[in-house]
Image 1 (spheres, helix red, strand yellow):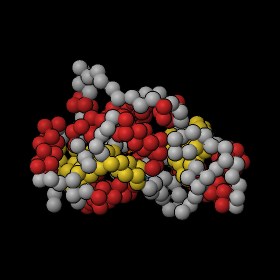
Image 2 (spheres, rainbow, N blue to C red):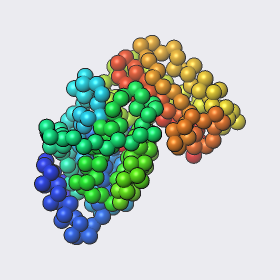
Image 3 (cartoon, helix red, strand yellow):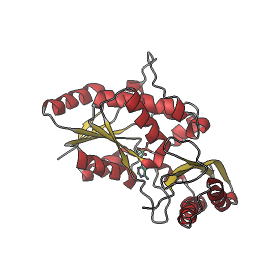
Length: 283
Ligand code: AMP
């Protein structure tokens, strides 16, 4: 089955209309492209749960608070299409910024509570861009379910909250974080890591493993666990820790840890910003 590629709003609307009239369920995976196995796992999850799978690739300018970061964001449409062909998805939606944000655009979706801390603090306006673009995509694609990665845990929680608040009739499915062999979370941004930055970046997961081991050994105090993680990352040269926290599902800081308490981290290594998270329970 060849993928139906939609490059404009009319095309995607008419395709969705056809799917709906066939009573087919639609699974949706929004991405910013430069795909990797993390994205493909989300696609596989969607395929298992829905008749048709629609993927979107859109580097959403509204969620970048830094124009340099937007400019440097890696892109390779031809390669992405090849990867998706192998996954046998049904349709690929490739909108442009002009389509989504015409000069007359003036309506934003903004979630308040969950977006205030962590990514929201370091990337002002980021989540407003995310929730707005995801709402536009949900309205166009009208999926029955959409898959989002735990890799961006705060984003996932914000989307879950938005879907609940705005009553989108869409099931949000969580996809596990897919990692490189040495534990670094797969990310489109990883190609920007130099060799030395890549070596430093693997310390993030090593620190997570230490934290999980401490928890397994009976240490429940968040402060103690965070201290250990911090030690591992403190001496990295040309690295700037933006935040490091242990939180619950509502992103509230925890004092006494439980299985699902989650370490959240954002760190800039040699100019490349990485985010990651893990629960203390290792399954
Ligand atoms: P992005 O293209 O980075 O905007 O990500 C698109 C979707 O893929 C989001 O739901 C991300 O959370 C998810 N994602 C990104 N990296 C990974 C990963 N390593 N494992 C699983 N999901 C991921």
